[in-house]
Image 1 (cartoon, rainbow, N blue to C red):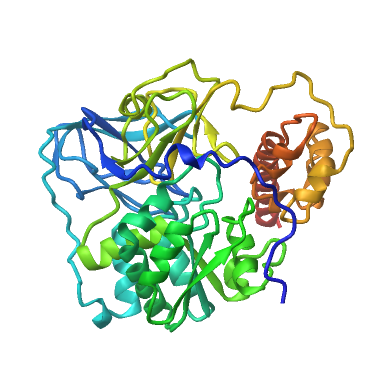
Image 2: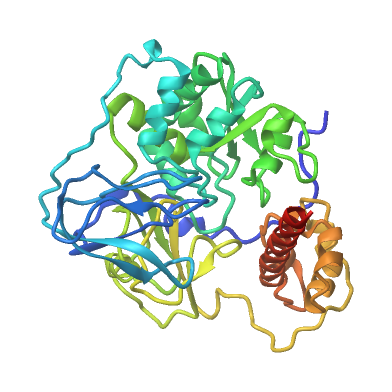
Length: 448
């Protein structure tokens, strides 16, 4: 059995900036939070509050309109706007803006269940749904959908605590400071799937976290120590490392009997089920050489990026770039007034020395290094060639849609070709083309 995965790279980790920094509350709470209605993968939520309403922490302020998860107020106070605002993912998104009254009045409708063993799987899924929990590793997929779609198919549940992305240490600190929530959250998931065995995958560059989680693991939970290699935290790669199973191209983890949940997501399941707390905040790593005081903070959703930068002491030098997330898969920030969402685990402010050198009009030299490191067995060199020439069908035939955008090819490319940027653009075009073809086919079917 092959307990590893193909490809991958070993980027400089830079985790020493914050890995020993305990999680702290914000020194100063934001005066306003801006709650985006697009905090998850799927359709935007619909606001159910209006300007002038008073809200409490944990109160539902937006309901799902399709695939998604409801959104809850992260502070108490007054709704002062319901309008499009800058989004950390680019463009603008409909948002609910709340003026903080700094009282933190709690008002969740969820009921605590310390005796969760008495709950049925359906009841647990309902609580997770009402709590608004999504994948907190960055993907943002609604957790209740992942659980319900895996019932009867999943025989292995894995907690993704690899945290392979450089600079980020939010999950590391969560394990050290609140590891019990992860273990108990995993037990809740195991009960929901009807399993008596669960796994927690951690990279071996976190020996203190490994020791902590091993001391807590019991009742059929096994801590799997993974040799450090990026992108170990991608769910398909972690599944192969933990179980030896390979998810087929275009397939989902459930196709090989697995379900993977981020460590922060798992802890959020515990808080929702046992404590009756919906998802309203998370640990965010503020890091990078451009910041005066890199640290880990517990931030309410909707906190402006500018406020978080102030929390880290501001800039000690002008950053070359600011990313939401890590350097490999992070999204560039275009507006510091944009606010955090559920999937934001870090704000990275890189100096010019830290950032990869930008090359104007970069040209592929056909060295093949991108092929050697692609964990999905793809050929980025040809995918990029077809994307450049806008040959979308050819790009799709090269399985471009299977790309997980991990950035390994970008990292290894000696010509600094912006491969991932090219693939993201190509995916957008391919999805648009598929929608047009579907609409045309439906129109023809109606004529017939």
